[in-house]
Amino acid sequence: MGRSGALAWRPGGIPISPPRANVSRRTRRRELMSKFATLEKEYGDLHSALFEAAQVHRRLCAPRLVRCGDFEIASEIFAVRYLPGDFFTVEEAGAGLILALGDVCGKGLAAGMWTPCLVGLVRVHAAVTSEPHAIVAGVNREFCRMHAPLTSVFMARLDPASGTLDYCSAGHPPALLLRADGRLESLSEGGMLLGMARAGAPTYQYHFTVRSRAVPAWGAHHAAELGFVFNNPGGFGGAKAPEWSQPEQRLADAMIGYWVQFAKTGDPNRDGLPVWPKFDAASESYLELGEQIEAGSRLCAGRCDQLDRILAAARSQEQQTGGR
Image 1 (cartoon, rainbow, N blue to C red):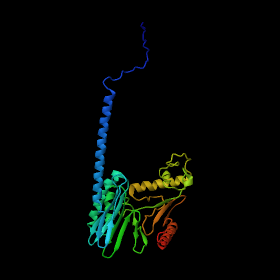
Image 2: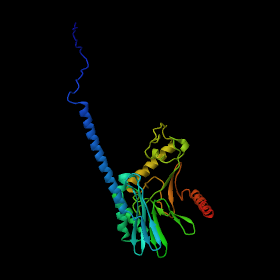
Image 3: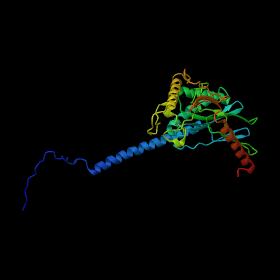
Image 4: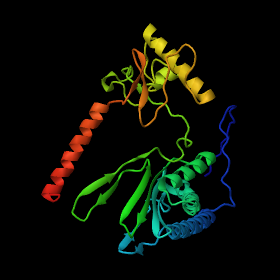
């Protein structure tokens, strides 16, 4: 017995394409395995290239051990991501040595690619002068010209005959000097990061004191001033906020005026606004931006002095107890 019937076609039905007869599961598997093999080879080539680049970086830096007179200078760098942005180099300077320790901001390839440039600049300027501050100033000029990433550097000149060490720090964490009698000193004197400002360029400091609207409990926190700079009462956290009060609007208008004038001329001062004094190491001048706009000097000096006293007392106690 057999049954017969009819299939009716209904408009709007879903067309179903027949499977591709010429593409089998085995063929698809071969294609995937071929692509995987290609990716595996490319990964291996990239890994080898990164390894070779890391070896070049190590050769650009100082040998792991350098002897000069009675001094031994040992160093080692471990990369977090194949190629580090840190470097350490030792250059001869007459009867002494120039030591340079630095860190390019960022990680991986981008930071590592700037390291040869920085090491080369240090060597070029160290061949001209042995003064650490002059070498740092020369490297900084080049970094500003090239718009290089911000970089911290600790530069020192060691005289093995006299045992003296002259140094200059550009935004680097303080180096620690351990003396023969066990005393530990922090070598913290210095200035800004390389690439932050052209040598001799005017610098202006401000202190913003208005409590954040977005997160009032944080007070005048980091970046809270950006809402005023861009005339945005809600700040940049997406918070809804009422319009500025009249004093807040005056402050926002003033800050916009300062920022625009600085971007145009390199000097924030303009007619109709309180004078914003230049910062220098002697006066440590700054501009207070809050309910009142007024100039001041030695920002938070009392607190900083207190921290210095606490740190000095802690170091003294550590020396007396032998670090226990």
